[in-house]
Amino acid sequence: MTKPQDLAQLLETLCPMFMLLDDKGLIQKVGPTLQKLRPDTPLIGKSFLDVFQLIRPRTITTIPALMSMAGAKLHLKFHDEPRTALKGLVAPLPDGGGAVINLSFGISILDAVRDYALTSADFSGTDLAIELLYLVEAKSAAMEASRSLNLRLQGAMLAAEEQAYTDTLTGLKNRRAMDHMLAQLSAANATFALMHLDLDFFKSVNDRLGHAAGDYVLQQAAQIMVEETRSNDMVARVGGDEFVIIFKGLTQEEILSSIADRLIKRLNEPMMFEQQPCRISASIGTALSTQFETVKAADLLHAADLALYQAKREGRSRHRLYSSLSQART
Amino acid sequence: MGHLMHGLINRAIQSFVCATYGQSCWLRVTEAARLGFVEFEAMLTYEDDVLFRVLEALSAELGRPQSEILEDVGTYLVSHPNMEGLRRLLRFGGVSYVEFLHSLDDLPDRVRLAVSDLTLPALELRELSVTEYQLLCHPGLSGYASVMVGVLRAMADDYGALVMLSEDGQQDRAEVISIMLVETAFAEGRHFDLGARNE
Image (cartoon, rainbow over all chains, first blue to last red):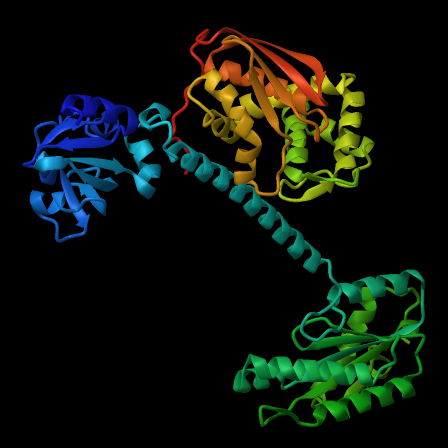
């Protein structure tokens, strides 16, 4: 059998975090890396159990019990700060001559290299510690790159949404789409009618029956507007319960009035949401591009608005033409 | 042909051009290369002819041969403050320059551990004597050896070693870099602290 002195030399090369204990549990030799963790406290001569607390198995509180743990994995911590967690393995020497305990950091290695300023030279050449540290840094760099890609993609998605022309709740066109369409029609000096439709009592449905009911009512109303118009008319949701319908090439007021009346009639019918009737109605104002010498989107919207307010003033659920207002320019 | 290039490589070139020659130079290069965009994404892949076009345009813009530019890319990857993370990863290769050289055989595997879909061609270190080495850069990535010369030179500075490097033609399709170690502890070198990772 090798002498303890030779054994210590061997261990220093192979496991720089070993301890050689005598039969009473006093530390006889310490590996250089382990001593580096307590630079101001010589570990030699101290009792193992005074330096370390056994976390698992907890039942071990005496040296004989420790010596009987051959081959079992130990979890321990320093008694004093920093209380670095360590893993250990006990190998008793023959004939009750003490034991060798080899320690390693396990997952605490990340903090340990910083807390104790460890270098590659503090680890045995076969230890995977350096590879683990490498991997942690490499993975966090890769994660960071992925994270920044995700952030940019999210930004691009938001920008794309902003540029969209569709109202996601109803599937109708949105205000942006309407603005574009009006700009186009004005530029072409086209002939068209603009209907501004406002749902009456929508707020009370929302307040009484909740947002889900409100959303349902908006979707049903949108459906009705699509059904009651031609496929090349544009129906847009331009506010919470406000809609604009643009009729290209249509300026006959009788036809527009009959469309508006049909819309109001259908929107007046109660909609059932989860066995609850939701009652709304609609007020509509209509203006024609032909009522202006040069067509400007803002003028036409304003004219339709005036007609809409007249409809509201007269008690809602009705349609008014801009041409019928006293201040109308004809 | 028709291979995909990992965006990290394209992104590295972009980062090098922007840091060294400025954003406007990069914009001119992307235009001349007909990219249709100005930002490479590190975590996406690109058809490999995209990078060829960028390198051609860059070489024309700067009036310098591609091999020279790629060598500078290698140096940039190690020595620029932008790339401190990469320098640290390379320093994990060993405590001395010679240990680092020996770790290069594992470099493609280390890279794959970090980014599983980034495949670099094999590297093979041959030790001719204690001061003379050859690094064989196996085929698969055009300009690989030029970048590696830059990396080896900058890492020598990092370790404080004095070396002479030269590209020495081909051996069995692999490009050969000759490394002559003049002095291993020539200068102080830069500090490497294992635990100094960023929070």
